[in-house]
Each structure stands twice: as structure tokens, then as C-alpha cells.
Amino acid sequence: MKRVVETLEFDVQEDGVRLDRFLSTVYPEFSRSYHQRLIEEGFVFVDGHRVEKPSKRLKAGQVVILLVPEPEPLEVLPEDIPIDILYEDEHLLVIVKPCGLVAHPSPGYTSGTLVNALLYHVKSLSSIGGVQRPGIVHRLDKNTSGLMVVAKTDQAHRVLVEQFKERRVEKLYRALVKGILEKDYYNIDIP
Image 1: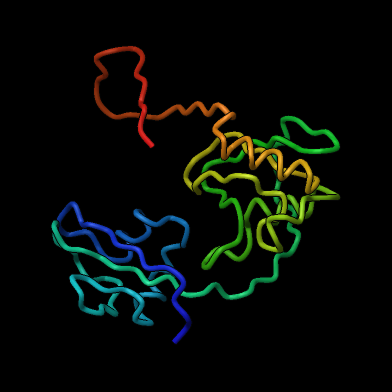
Image 2: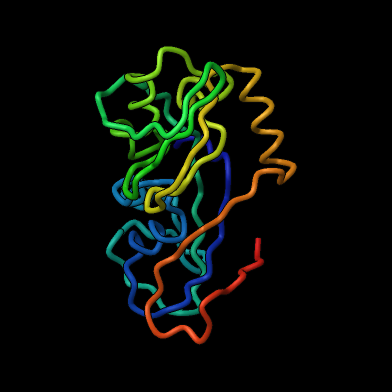
């Protein structure tokens, strides 16, 4: 069995959801197919019992534990994926990440990512993020669209990461909601 690098625990809130779909929702860093593989390989427990069927239906109140194995080394190749570059200079670029595009390769997403596109379109990227995350300063979830800052140099990468860490970068989000809102403006102030 692969070495486990992290143990994650999730509480089930609703009845009837499939285990693989539940994990894809609460931990979108992995694809659903990769979650299915982890379930089948015995890395997932429900209420302390190993579960090896991705189709298992969950009940509200159950606890799901995901053992995250050590990542498999990936070869990241350039791919001609269109990207919308909003701004670029010798230190950084700002791109518009569309909904559905994964920021960087991870288990289950070995190609078709923003990093694959950046390797194709940009001559030089910061190496601080390693082979799988070159230039990536921060990320947006797969199903989130928005602006991303990408570092072209190691110096820019260090400065940008520090700015995000110290919360000197202001982030604004827009959300689609279902239903009727009582006010025109809401301020959500949660971590």
C-alpha cells in the first residue's frame, strides 16, 4: 500500500449521496475517478469501516475518513490549450481561468490543466512551485472562474506568495444564487 501523507475527516450532511460523489464535492482537489480508485484501493473509511464500493450510499451523521496517499510523480507536458491573458510583463501574468479548468496537475488530472497551457504559451515560469505547479502562486477550484496571478520569475513568486499570505491581496467573489435575495448587497466575512 502507498504511504499515507494526510488523513482527512468529513461529516455527511444528507442522506443518499454516493460516496464517490460526496468525496468529489468535499475534496475537489482530486477527480471523481481518482476518488473511485482510492475507495477501491481501501483508502476510504465510513464510520471506521473500510469501504471499497464507490457507489455506497451515505447517511446523514456518518463520518468519512479519506487517507491521502503520497502523490505519484507526474510528467507535465505543454499543451495547446487556449488561455486568456489579461496582463503580462517580465515578472508575472494575470490570466482569466474559466470554470472547469483545473489549475495544476494532481491525481486524476494529469493533463488539460492551466499548468499544461502555461508551459505551452509562456517561455519562462517560476520554478518554486516545482514540476507540477510552475508559476502557480494561488489556485482557484476547478469549478470556479476568475483571475489568477502567475509568476514568471522566482523573485516575483516569493513576493506574490508573501502578499497572499499576509492578506495584502484583496479578493472579490461573485456568486450565482438560487432564490430571492432580500438585499442587493451582502458581505460574507468567513474564512
